Image 1 (tube, rainbow, N blue to C red):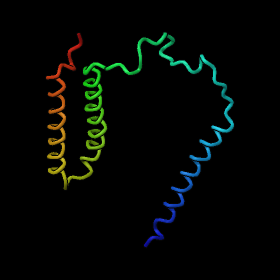
Image 2 (cartoon, rainbow, N blue to C red; image 1 turned 45 degrees about the horizontal axis):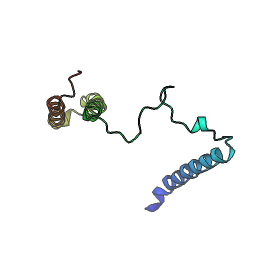
Image 3 (cartoon, rainbow, N blue to C red; image 1 turned 60 degrees about the horizontal axis):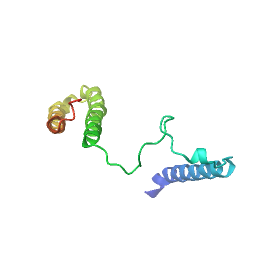
Length: 121
């Protein structure tokens, strides 16, 4: 029974070993010289304003949440639509599943809307 997993285990070991070897070789063979200019933070060629520990506005997080909500929607709906016609015996279940998913997205959208993330001042 476990013999079925031997090729998978070999592949996993090969991938891990390959990643470790490549990272080690790049570290050993790289020719880097630390200079004060290279150690400075880079922000589009402009000098850094403030510290990295400043607080962000809540609006930044709301916009990030908005992106995630609609990104997940696209990633889920496209394969669902492509496979919907291929499974006619499960059409009712798939429709219910999509309505539940859209309802969850609607709750996230309404939350973001009420918090004012869609208003650009």
